[in-house]
Amino acid sequence: MVFEDPEVLDGDLMKVLRVDDDGSVFIRYQNDRCATVTGLNPLPSRGDVLLVGQGFWRVAPLEAWKESNEVGVVRRILEDGSLVVETSGILRTVKASEGVDCGKGHAIEFNAVEGVLRLLSETPITLLRDETDDDETPPMPVVSQAGTPKRGFDDFGGFKDVVAEALELIESQFRYRKYADQIGARPLRGVLFTGPSGVGKTHLARIIASETDAQFHLVDGPSLVSKWVGSSERALREVFARAEAATSGRAIIFFDEIDTIAERRTDDTHEASRRLVGQFLTLMDGFRRDAAVIVIAATNRPEALDPALLRPGRFDRQVAFRMPDDHDRLEILKVGAAPLQTEGDLPFEDVAALTTGWSAAELALIWTEAGQVASRDERSRISAEDMVIGYERAARRVVVAVPEASR
Image 1 (cartoon, rainbow, N blue to C red):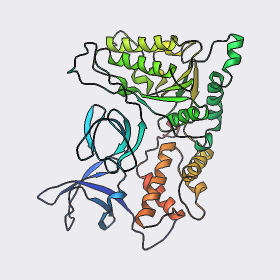
Image 2 (image 1 turned 90 degrees about the horizontal axis):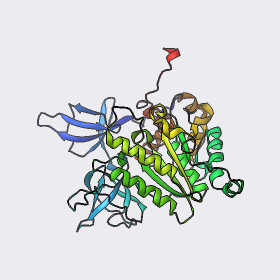
Image 3 (image 1 turned 135 degrees about the vertical axis):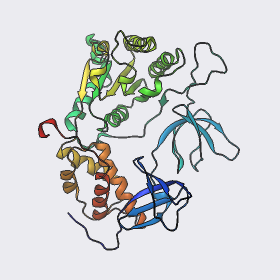
């Protein structure tokens, strides 16, 4: 499908990082790839966003540049109202936003252009220190706990069989728990989501928490690992304690990239990693029998997990995610379009057929690009042409794995 419009100039967005004396312009693409551009006249300025295409370039509005959102903890509020935010152990200054009231110790979502986007947790996150409790020891935030906005299964496109299997397992812990207790059956404690990155494992866990009215605790595996002695184990204990104390009486703990904190132990495994895995196993076994808490973990490397995690009573159930098929991709595209302002008939089927091997996250990139096309043209709705251009731009960034059999 081809749309022809001589007034549409298609190009790539680039951000100017540096302008050298020889006229070389150092730029960064939105996929974080960097390059040097020469021959631009007049020279742009540092911080400019450029739209560069075949034989043309122009300065684009700053709003066109899509920054990746990050999550961090507010450490200080400066006199001008801006915030000092810590994320992944790095401090950075973030501008405040109207309508988002946050304070020291609160978890926020932000990006470099728009500043604070939303408050994730009104409860200050506990700061963890090493076992010496030295006041000079740098604290480390390791867990983001946030109530999730109301989401339903209609917000999860495709994978109907996966959704049904996951829901059946989770409902056994919440909705039908009293019958299991009457029978005397052992409650389900852990479910492992396996599959490629970007297929919606975290998204589905959030929806399940919302649908079951359970408090949702999101733990990012890599951020849990601390260089401070005992901090990682203490963080784990705090997560499980918070879940058991949930005011709603129901809680889901979701560990993303569980293989980073519970990798298979060998003779060469560092002692700190051994202690962390051992602490995790102890906590999984130590739930109160009446605690309505379930642990969901996600990994794209199930073979790397310590076998002790997969024995009965821990992660004894697995839900396997796959790359979306044609029907899944069609549903994902339609779900992605639902909250957007669109006009006319959109080519869902055509784009779904062209995106074999794409993940849900990669399909979502189409709408990001389509929205940029429409907004730069000063329109408030996405058209069929915008969607096609969005697909073409996203396709340049998506690398689809070729199956062994077809090589």
